[in-house]
Image (cartoon, rainbow, N blue to C red; front, side, top):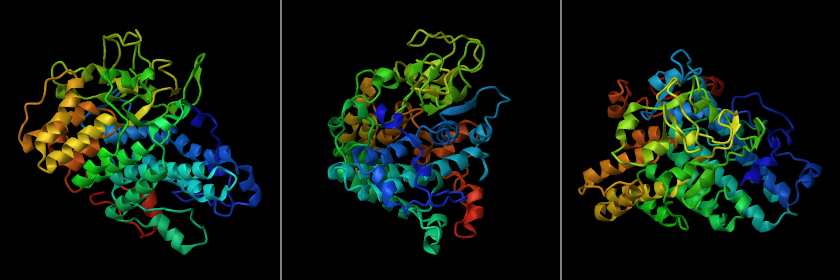
Length: 488
């Protein structure tokens, strides 16, 4: 899907009859002139609206430093890293669970996802008007936009709890639309909205195998069902988890775990949805990729190539069993040689770094070619195993768990009881999906967080830290329409 991003231009600023200075900064695009519509009234023009949504994933505030701060550094899988005196603006407080409603990471993830939702709403509003574009293509593109909107809202509800549901392009003169943008909905309402978008998207999206090789990264039918299963998992709707996992077909576990996180493993048989890093080496520069995602996590110091943040914790290191091939595929160790023959000297500042973020092409480039994998078939198998076990079908769940362990070079689990298998699945999720942005949320949804953080000497406050604070700038703007999360 490299092509999808290369033709990017700023659609968010193209159709503007007036820009808002508000925190959510939604551009008014409902009143688009006939002349403007005609410029995009063809297949390529229609696709451009969805291209602009995918391109948002390349932005610094969406997928890079702050995203790692919220999903990884704030978990027990990672430490702040870097030099002791380099806070990364707020990565020290993210690591210590002492962040507040004005912390940069908290603010950026909130605003970035609403920027993306605005682009989704633009696509959903305008594409039906492009009557010279192929009808089937238009339906599929709207399905992609709904999948992506659901993806953003899933990020928001996991991170902040209930949030405003902006399901259309707001009219600046409408009081109803102003309230829509500024009033938080309940967590349950957000989940229902996500499920509706994903259900509708699944009806019109193509199977992954139906896309040409140049567009393998587009949202597919399998991606919609896999994300829907994950949404069900977070709500403990166990039978729906199983049902939706069963609809994720055409994927398989790849034999070599490490291969998935290298250039050759992009969009492989196990990949269900991943963000495409589009960087291509051109001398010492790159074509636009995910901004600073790789370099911010690269080894820091003499002989290094990055900023050194988001380093694997000792707790994660100790979670791997002896002989688990995933450890050396996930963690870069100082004093070792990487798969591309790069030597990591002992002179770097931290003992461990994130291998899954490593870019072999130009590792110190601001924009590199590393992809971010968000949905893999291994995750689907583990979700299904967890749901089966919770429904007292433990003997059916165990083979799915063992399929993951076999690929990792491990013997079958010795767990047999429901309680023991539950713990085994949770542990397997940690080492299988390390640094894939699930760990913090998994700790919260499974009730493990208080104990897990205590091992690190950190206090996870029950009733507070399950969600992050709503940005204070938004609370101020809402003027009483939205309240802050408890404890903040």
